[in-house]
Length: 423
Image (tube, rainbow, N blue to C red):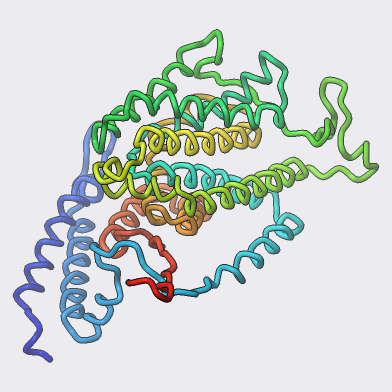
């Protein structure tokens, strides 16, 4: 066993890892700013580099053993594609999903206000991830300006309330429709573009929307933002005192006032919308349009050669993905009670794209899990607020090395050949 271990290779890996650690951590850890001057901290830097070198050496030696090779074989290879399940396979999700729904129903009865707001934020990013998963994960269209449709939904609620006196329930479908129209408008100019060119155009579209919202002071309020209305239930408001002559819910029903009722209602409505979007996406992926998206992702030339209308396929992906972002924007605006352009930067688009990539391109369950991991985990790790972006980058690197297809890869159930039909 010892003869199969290449010590020279392990030492080379350790030295390279030390050089990378020196380059990465040198400016961050080895130099400490002190006013207009700086102090060198070679001891701290040397300790970190030594730990990296030693850790890489031990890891490299271990991975060359039989146990290490078995562990490496357990990881997914970069060339693995769609996983085909045996015919008649029944997923365990048929038991897990009903249990999760029951847990979600009783969750607000025991949750604090802070926990409710964190879960609401997670569900909003689930909606965003599901929408972008249609565009990027299924259709293979790299969209770096997806946050623009999110902003359209959020500002649709704020502007509709300010200028037209429209409420939450009226704006919800209208914002989805407006975002879908914006997605179709974006889709037309980029029909002939692929890859990096498409990414640059969509990135520019997202920045255009943000700059318009930021500079149109007389209409959007500019950097100062705008207030957004709270949701209502058949005209009943959730505040202690109703506005504009309305009636609070606790006075109408004769119950004690609960300050968390607004967030409980937003959580319930958002959870139902997420379930609806999950069902619609699940059905679409098994319909011809879903297969057309996947064909477009794999090879556009072959897709067109099969007679599929690539124009309609692309526009349908952009439109449906954008409408989902519009819904998420409305919920975000009513949850915050306020919107401004700083909430819709490129970092938001990058975060949503990271959710899709980490969860698994095209995987619905993976996107749901990744959305909660990347939004709820930072809230639970506030003690490490200065290192959250660093931890996020490390997570991305590790995922791309060991799970290049994401947390959960796409799977398809196999089909048994019919009798009398040649395989």
